[in-house]
Amino acid sequence: MADLLRLLLRVAEKAANVARICRQEAPLFQLLVQEKTGEDKNKKFVQDFKTLADVVIQELIRHDVRAQFPELAGFIHGEESNKFENGLGESVTVTVCSTEEETAKLLATVLDGDQTAASLLARAVHQDPSTIEAGTHGLTVPLKPSELGVWIDPIDATSQYIEGREEVLEEGRLSPSGLHCALVLIGVYLRSTGEPVMGVINQPFNNKDPTGTGGKHYWGVSSGSTNICSESRPGVRSEGGLSVVLSSNEKQSVKEALTSVCGPDKLMYASGAGYKVLCVIQGLADAYVLSEGSTFKWDSCAPHALLRALGGGVVDLALSLQQSESGAQDPRTELTYHQPRADRLGADRWANHGGLVAYRDVSQLHSIMGALRGKL
Ligand SMILES: O=P(O)(O)O[C@H]1[C@H](O)[C@@H](O)[C@H](OP(=O)(O)O)[C@@H](OP(=O)(O)O)[C@H]1O
Ligand SMILES: [Mg+2]
Ligand SMILES: [Mg+2]
Image (tube, rainbow, N blue to C red; front, side):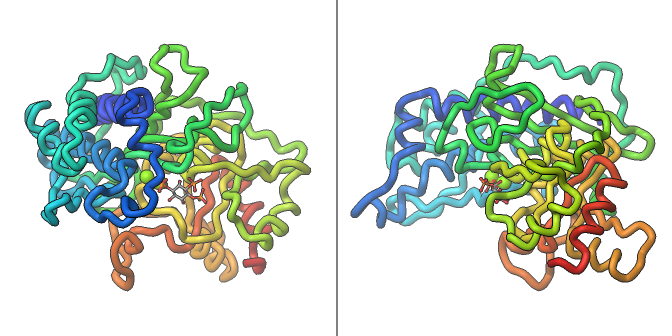
């Protein structure tokens, strides 16, 4: 299954190209950032271009993965629905066609006849990405495509992608917001158990990139005795307390509870669920705590696989607290990716309802659980 990993790295790079082109090409950029006002706001048929960009990226990933691994068809899920309504009130399913011309024609039907934008977008979708050196040579992964499912978040931290602020990234430091928080996330899980086994993260905008494309990629595989990640495991630094990254919307009670295990200035905030887990992967924070069910399977699957490959994981916070309160020795309840919640509807079926804690080191996870016990 190393072939699947190489393909995911390639399609994620293609997706990153589309994300970059939407910001670089003026006709696409104008659509991306336009605020609808007045009558326009009420025109149901021109859906937000940002949603279309997300859908196009998701569908190109789905198309290329299905073409090389037909066994995965039916098991490639994404954040977005690919149904759009056009000006004639017709429902249009956005897909990637076999030729650039056909894709452009289809996209024009949802872009209110804007041929220039449709052609630019179609060209990006059909363009092969430059070869990326990922260091996967000689890797073997003992998995079969018929055992696997895929979760796609075409762009995570969309708000940062639209806002488009380029931050100067400093080595070894978390940068709370900006274009670098926008990530393409592709996670692979086992259909039988829901465990995340492979993940690819592409950061389309990383101004420290040595390759010159402007982006960076990360990957990991965690299956049986194979645990391998593009990032090396950062050392555990316990002096001065733990560092934890949170959403800026996190509850006051959680922040207060965590101050007992975190050093001064070690509670940090960052945009994007995927970026926050990436900070843990890179050792820029020891853990990411989220007390609300505001993330979804497509947000966590890919980075979860990388953390597992590094010896860490992502647990369901509410379930793990319950386990720990009932005296379980190892209260870890890792998130799984194969089963929807039967009692919810739509996207909510795939939410990580109990919140989460992403960690690299299990003893640090235990300290965090201890601090949160009885406090939520
Ligand atoms: O941009 P999309 O793909 O819709 O994913 C969102 C996640 O689902 C949210 O959980 C993130 O919010 P928080 O950063 O407050 O957790 C949210 O982060 P943001 O509000 O900082 O952009 C995004 O990561
Ligand atoms: Mg997301
Ligand atoms: Mg998204």
